[in-house]
Image (tube, rainbow, N blue to C red; front, side, top):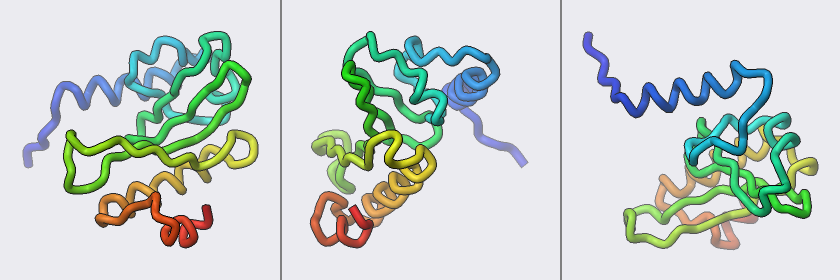
Amino acid sequence: MRLSFRFTDAILIFWCVGQHADSKIDTQNSGGRGVRLTKRVIDTADQSRGRHTLWDCELRGFGAQIEASRTKTYFVRYRPKGLGADGPRRFIRIGRHGVIAVEQARERAKEILGSVAAGKNPASPELNNLLGA
């Protein structure tokens, strides 16, 4: 049995594992690759950098917006199914850090991305009522 494994997969796995091996989390130099979003990572995010995004390395499209005003908001980014790379990017806010836990936000993001994969529009009012948004 031969497994298919790309070099870029190995780098992403190494990056995610390496981020948690250190006692000091480096959210400033993630280079767009992301870190596993946890309460600790969000709490220690550097607000002095101004507005920036921390991306989760486990769930593509799930992130946290960090504001200079210390506001931290979970969101999900996606493109509608069938439109490909030319499709518009859509953003849905999930909730504020502190009001909603990281794991709850991640589960909500999975629900939203699952509905996108099923061909639905998560931004529609009907689906928002279903998800409890």
